[in-house]
View (cartoon, rainbow, N blue to C red):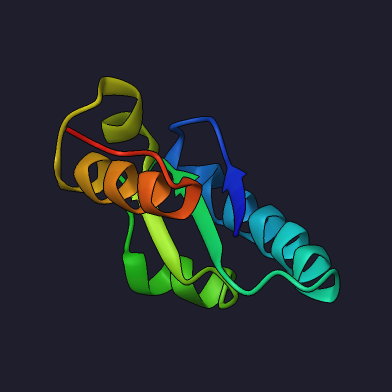
Length: 90
């Protein structure tokens, strides 16, 4: 699994951040990775547009939820990361 973490919350630059994630995921794909996650501020953005900017990303998580440790994206990220890492979640 390759995880790209993109900071910043300005909507105007979000698509550049998604494009940067795509470049990193393409490098990871060449190294044999098969699962590609991107943590990015999704507030005010179209997920469909983000998917166009980074088609390699197969899981998108809202970084604000992950940092706050609350919300649907946090729960999914926590569960899946723990499963991938073999960490029991209580």
